[in-house]
Length: 305
Image 1 (cartoon, helix red, strand yellow):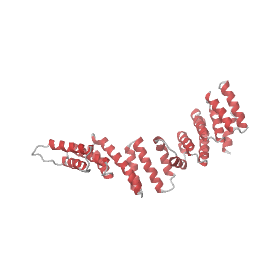
Image 2 (image 1 turned 180 degrees about the horizontal axis):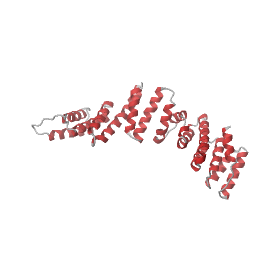
Image 3 (image 1 turned 90 degrees about the horizontal axis):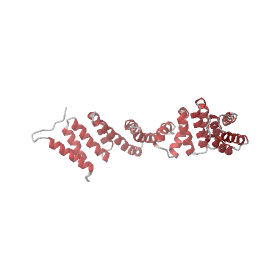
Image 4 (image 1 turned 30 degrees about the vertical axis):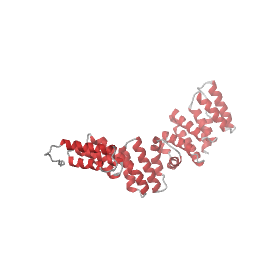
């Protein structure tokens, strides 16, 4: 049995290089383990590692954790084993894999999250998409964790609807953790392929927000590129504040390029797109007035070819 093999490897190791207290706790743990009192063994090994976490102590703690079973303890122990001895990473990985199997069987998704994240940190090729799918569907995770788990979950999605939903969540995470440049590519992909109008409605706002952000980023150096981003934001969410703000950005991008008529049209659209004047309306009107003030009575605004 795989657990027995890991247990034997840990228990038969001799103690050494630690103080009397750690040595005594280790002997207590060995005795409890041999008598199948695995919870007592975990308690003793925990005390032993506090006085000096040698690799063999972490291995013993991991084996006892699997036997209790306490898969969170096993995950911690095998993660520390891998960190403390590069030659025992495979042993630690196998222990984590057993812990993940056990947590999944027990429907203990909170612990499965801990184990899976430990696997991802030391041997990502062992991470299981089915585990990731269950974690993201049942457990609250941080944005950084979702960044790692969602691609695995997408690969294990049972149908297109769930895969699209997970991809949309991945786009949202990319937008808020890494960059809109990455996120918008995923938004576009999901919006092209999804058959769910509800999901599409949820994602267009994210796509528009990313396009607006990218437009502002490029406005100073590449106004022609910024114009394209602002147009995408307007197209994605024309009736929203994001879309209206993109119209203001579009006006600025065109103005920088010398297209004052095009700029005025964009500002006018932003100013008249709501019946209740707000800060965007005021900003758009200010920009229109700046264009008017810049023109002498005989000037005619013409777009730059």
